Image 1 (cartoon, rainbow, N blue to C red):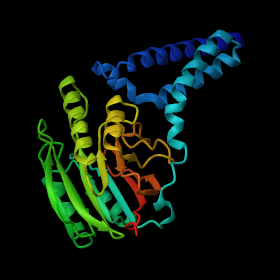
Image 2: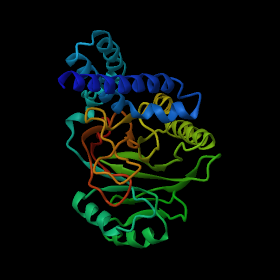
Image 3: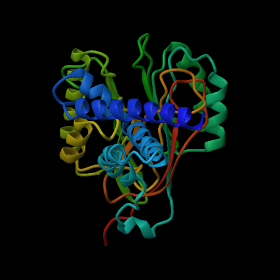
Length: 321
């Protein structure tokens, strides 16, 4: 009986490790075809699968298979562990937190508007970046105007309505469109600790087809160019529909010079395609100029959406003397 269970365990571990190996090879070609792009986002699961398989092979003393699984672990471990390593120090690291932001994709079909409003009252952010609102959501969000008198809302009957709410005066406010996309972003200026910030509420296409993938990547390229020449500090938050392991994301980060607020706080997944007690993928991001320090980052509660919000505390440095 014990031998039979070991054989079943060994067989399962073979299937899991073999699948991880196949998906790993396919994801190498993420920049070439859609399937590779879709598979590249599951690095955490590949790591867990490889590690579990390695444990099973070790218990069964299947040494060659153990080496195979260990190689898979070595491939995926660095891309996950890096998000838990402390971020490089910045001058703003000596500054107390002076800006709290929330970014949330609300899901247009989500009828639990009160959940989000209660969450905002509890989180008490200074700026709220909101994606996926329609006219019904726009009506409900008007309840925020007393606490957040500075705002810009662009509801849409589709999935790409967008909004920005702030306690801090916004000047100027403009709507930005990537030339090959119909999706709007909200761009605004504001001042924190004597420094002027350019902030963007951002949302782009999910890569559900080759055409949408190319448009999303064009959005990311345009975003990088848009912020790379900014004279102000930059803060971009929203639903990027991409994880940090995608070649398109890495290209955008290199070109823009921005950093991800997640660094040092973990992977922090925010999205699940189906109702789930846990999120699966980190699709929502807060990107910012390297001079801005991140004091804390956490995932908010479920608000009826397929995304969970991010709550981030930042320290904006004062002007140089």
